[in-house]
Length: 179
Image (tube, rainbow, N blue to C red; front, side, top):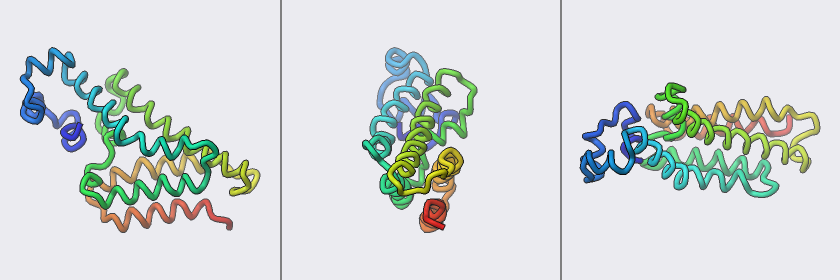
């Protein structure tokens, strides 16, 4: 997982995987079929260990603005950690792989859609709970925040200063403040 996360799918060779895992090429192919099979297994591991804490915030019953702020706060804080410089395997993979392989693309886009759906739901909850005004354009704001969520790991990976990332999060969340 860390190798694909750091080097990307195309930048990771079978030799890199053999060296990193200590498992022979034959063993890797026997277990995963091919490099893509190993990538998908690594992606599932990433989803279970790195994406799950984000989904735990999003999936709280009644989650609204406080949870949305916690989600983006977690992302901003992650950029300050050593692993934060790697960005996000989900969005790195979307940027690198695009939609070239339908099966892999579907797995990656599934995670993006879970995040998008969660953001929409938190904003809808905020409207229903009176935190945002009736008539608030939930879809428009959700699209904007998903764009920010997609951009943050790309910025972290490119070496953007964590303070800049925190500023971006702050400005993005300020769109939820009363006018």
